[in-house]
Length: 142
Length: 128
Image (cartoon, rainbow over all chains, first blue to last red; front, side):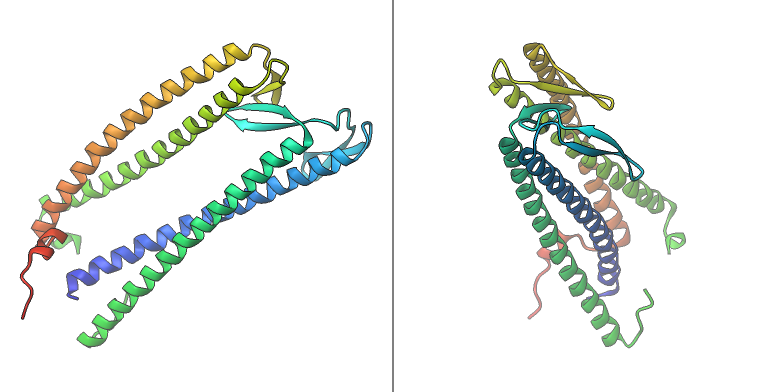
């Protein structure tokens, strides 16, 4: 390794670190989305086993609620994307949400794998730079 | 370090960094558009397989409004998809063009800084 390659490796480490930050953000978004899907599924399951006319509290944000009654517990509305939603039975809706949770889990694993690969390459590059400075008898101030 | 370089190379490096940013922006836009196209595709499929009595709602601001005319809605989504397909193709062309310029600038900078490019390194005869 020569000095040019050390500079190149240092730049690659910086890029990899930025990638790791972006991947960590992606991971967090996927986790939050998965939790949201699980909450929606639990709600549909619970409402379906109740009675029509059951009283519930509907969140309106800022930890505030209003009273409401379930007028129809045999149907749920699920989004299919592109601003469209379809009415489905609770079982169908739960199936759709389960499929999406599986998809999100797969995406989370992929992001995790990419993070591991990126971390390994950062480690490898750092070791090579340290080796260069150890051999040349100088210190790495970066 | 940049101050020691000739102005021409400094300019090339600045252009190179700008191009990298533009490529990143275009890639992000393309990914977003492709995701929207997939979403539209899926929505059209769901609409086409939905029965006559299926209830379909459309988000309008924070309201969900029942869509009565499914055929018109399907056509509207298909048109949206076509428009997005065209935009994806345009971004593809821009991306290709920018990557070519990026590559050529990288070669020019490497030459100016006398850093052997990967291809040149591969061509170097092995010692021993």
